[in-house]
Length: 464
Image (cartoon, rainbow, N blue to C red):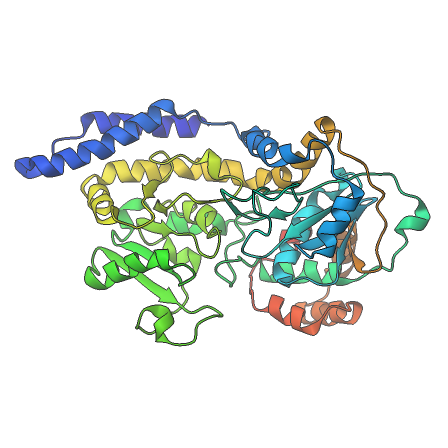
């Protein structure tokens, strides 16, 4: 917090001392004044939120869970599961169970990793989590359907987990142990986490203390060494990205933006008539001063990572939300860009002409991101949501029964014990051992193998 305040004071001072635009060009000067006034107004009304207890996100929790204050019935949960609006999870006596089917196994593995980190503090419950790109529940649907998503547009309802709670008998929780917990720990530990957008290994930026890479690239590329060309790489998941690609072809010194392939790519028509560019690792984005964040099919999911570069983020549009978006303010944490990009050239000219102002905005976001994403992404989404709502909502209780379609994903202690018992083995032997133990689908295992990570497996499991 103190670091953020010092940074904002520097930004205010810069704005006060900002000299007139050279050349006495009144039109250009007035444009800069418009932007500077917007920054000043944003700073005047912005109140930084303490990240110490995740209270920044209480408003999001309240808003999203208000439709369920009357309770979540057993019938409602059964209907959600029947309609297959997401992946069905249960937590019973601190053990996590999941249905066998998961559309995106690597995303389910990510969900399970974070649940297992806090599972010792969670009551018995069940939930349906949508791991697709697009939310499955429109806001106008009545009654409200308890399905939780990674992101949502303004017309959709819920961003986090649903709970129902009841004590169970020993007979109700008997289920065969599924050893996929072990393969998940190994693969996530050795190969890192898969990002829904990039589809490749990215820096494990949410692993506090064990992942020095999250600031390594930013330190390698301080502001004065960064390239002043605006930068974007991504697939054509939304036509809203087209204007930036076309601007790059017209003005390559202003913007370096190209389309990459995704699973839907068929021809150069899908990359606006040009060959697809190669994928670029997130760490290499940090070489550039100005980075663009667009929606794709849903929220881009890259925004939290871009901030860690210490670069200035140009955030396009405001239709989509992840749970931390409400705490980010335009002109304080990023440069807002109209959805049609009609003002993008003017904005780029402004930041290039006012480099010190751009630097202060970029660097003031770093402590905010580091402080608000670490524990709150884990505890705020699971533990905080559960504890806060269980204490006030009076939700309708429903009996949890371990369905035959759900298999155990284990407990955090299971994972830790297994890792400790096998930590002396070389990596190849660990893989052979885990494959022998696991009944997981071979395709799922191969999908997880592609996310190569140099960190050891304790990155995921050491604090469980």
